[in-house]
Image (cartoon, rainbow, N blue to C red; front, side):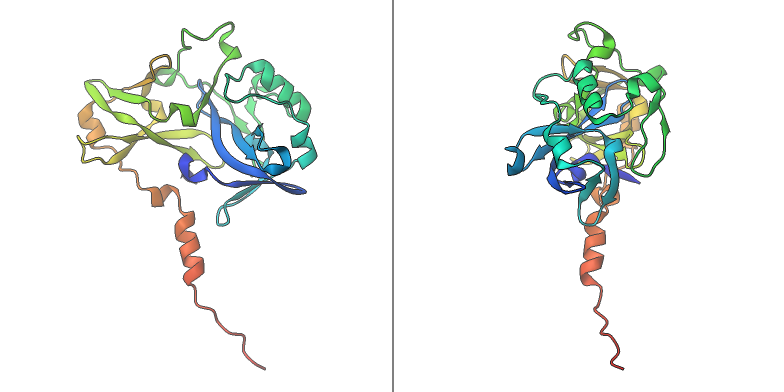
Length: 254
């Protein structure tokens, strides 16, 4: 199912032996636009430290009660490498993290690790107009710095072929493959303040230095784009409402 990223923020993360913390954000690969890590703000048990957890560690999701269960222990998380997520996350940081958890390195296998449904996902690069060129501020190897925060990319200005169309408000992700599929664009006032969704495949390039995204669409085409409706991509509210309003049927007295 497709879900918007903002609706997943705040989900609890539970280890096999207790709660770890809450989802604060996500990191995605700027070449393939796959989610690589959940950013977790731990509770008082770890002094609020923020940690990175790969999506393939998620073994169960309770959409109704808003939590992810991972195949990790709190001790494993406590002893994980202390990565400052407020600074760029380099490949060396990932190597240390993957070594600690004994995860298979996605950058070596060519496949995305097994997800919570047990599905191994192929890991092709986005080609053609969807290819993301490396930013000029990236130092060293192109593969050394490739992760972007959804929180930081939110707000990037989006440009069509013939003009500005707004800014990134949110993202839509496939909850089985963790692939980002769409950008949710806030069109400001020129489209009545409505939000539309634009496919990641329509991205021509991203200017990471200047926080700009260029898409292979005209303003006219954007006006005809599908409108973003949060209830469509965040169905848990409806599910919760249905659960709460269901009538209680008393057991028959025998």
